[in-house]
View 1 (cartoon, rainbow, N blue to C red):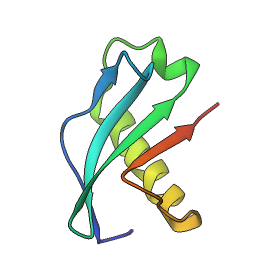
View 2 (tube, rainbow, N blue to C red):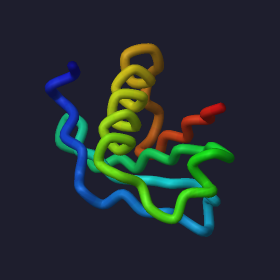
View 3 (tube, one colour):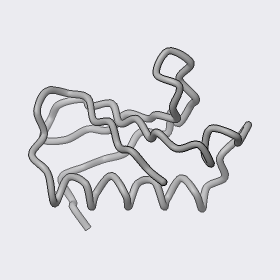
Length: 77
């Protein structure tokens, strides 16, 4: 696990981006992570188990990619 990232408890559906999103603290900066998924989009609410899965997806993305700016868009199938 990446200990330098702290996920905030603000998971919500963002109508403008048409995706679920939450914010996190990474090295002192606030970043916003958007999860684009047709399956997730159908959900009216996300339970804590799915939220933990999304946090893991974000951690894996950060391990494999370089953060540019303060927004991440993750396309999921």
